[in-house]
Image (cartoon, rainbow over all chains, first blue to last red; front, side, top):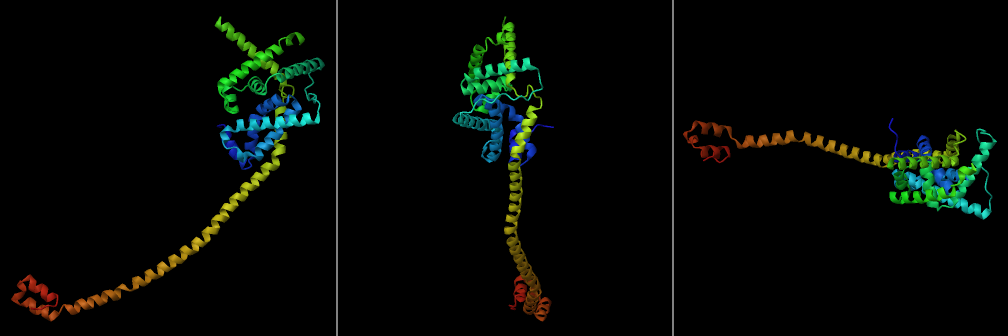
Length: 182
Length: 139
């Protein structure tokens, strides 16, 4: 069966079609998470921002003027909600929520190793400008292509490549000694 | 040489992806994204239901809007049709009388005896004389 386009799914979701909206969630939840993580730097906050963003997106779905560009429109909402969340957190002076213990019990060494790696990665990502963080996560974590990122973030492909290049260079420098640590 | 550089580049890309995969919450919990989706769908259930109800209501509004303009239009069309049928039947009934009157007039104008006399006469050889007789202008 032919896969339905974003525009078709948006039209279905506008009339309250649950399957249509769920397909949009399935398609973009990972990208939304990558963007949210790029802004918040915390898993729990990123999850909250993603959930909130999908709800807001549905409530404002009639404002999405070009349903074919749903992904870019959604990611803008995710970015804004994530920034709001960070602002609220900083006003509350909230402390970092630990990584969820919801794992398949890989053993204490591996857990410790993963936790350390995550801390290093977050620190390295924190050092990047937000747009570079977002692009490197969408490309290297979610596997989006340059053209997809360019299209959905509304920027030239060359700019995406340039941001990606500088982001990777910075991450490489930050994580150069990781293998020795691991 | 170029091939070696490309291969090294690809390996570095894979390394990066492997390292960044540590940030993927689905890495340690295969059901993570499904659960995440279920939580999102729970949160949006009310809004979806509201949209379904609104869509149903808008269909009903369209139909009732149509019926509001359709009923007076149908009534007007029926009245016009009735008037048209009535006037047509009246018009259809009138012509036989009118034709009868015309025939009578024509009958009067064409004097049969005059015509017989004229036909017997040599003067009918002239077409103008025949026409004058028919038109009631006997010479």
